[in-house]
Length: 165
Ligand code: FEO
Image 1: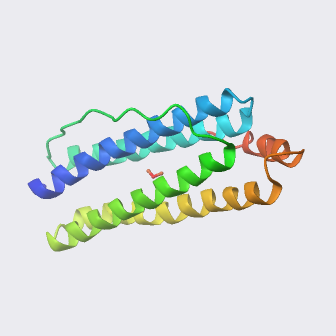
Image 2: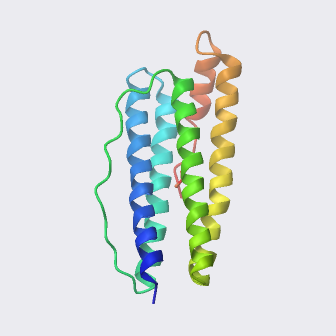
């Protein structure tokens, strides 16, 4: 049986992961509006991944005999500026998520909830990958700038991202 503190914190994280999915979908729509179809595709795949992150926690709470309490998902903005700004915002968002995952990990340690600690290890590792991928894209965007052909080359590369498995 899962403790109430951890259960509530995991429920909050489920909502946060779903908010991430909503945020990335809004960013995808923003990119579509500027004809950056590759970036838009990449962001839709990212949104799917966030839904998977939420569902993995959902299943974990269920498996532990916990109670799910889903909350309202905050509406994302609809305007994000240029593509470089979009990825700056993603990186900041992911850094915030990393902080939340680390806090959850600490809580599971403090509560001696070893099963949660092990489950959360996956998220700790995933956040390294998320920040690294977004940071690389941001570096590339800064290198090519938003004028000229480079940005369209990057857009076509982003369009090749495989669907989330
Ligand atoms: Fe679920 Fe992007 O972290």
